[in-house]
Image (tube, rainbow, N blue to C red):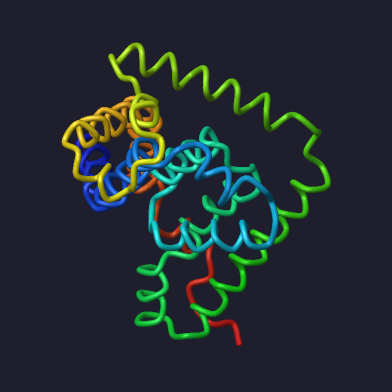
Length: 229
């Protein structure tokens, strides 16, 4: 049991920076960007929007949990479903740090395969969303997400939309200078963390259990450990 907890805590510590970064990005999007701005940039599922979402996902370098929080914020702010999913795919499959490590440890062939595979995943997802998503379903999901956000804001004593109501045309530089806005960023950060902490803990505990209880020889049989020619 102690070994399971140790390995789970060690993996959590190793990925904590990605969690903090992802939740911070999500909080900043909630506070500093209006719905109209997000809708203008990511409100359609066109090539430009998909490319922008893919770039932002790769730059965020988030883990899956934090990428989910940021993507949900984009969706609630008016982004279309396909760009939101592209952001999530890119944030875990086109991570700059991962590509750098792959280059050092395995060579540029693996980096190229990772990049090509990520774009194939995003392309297939884009096609499936465009051809199978029922009309109006994304708006129903957005309305439900907005209701959850309002409920969470009231429970935490927050008014995330008040920044836009005070000065809807205020430049981003001035918004960043307001101390009150950074208080809202902190509130949004902890609200996102409070929504996902159970899933995070369960995920790392499962990883710890697999590391301790599953024999290393089993993993060797499951995955390729040497060249087969």
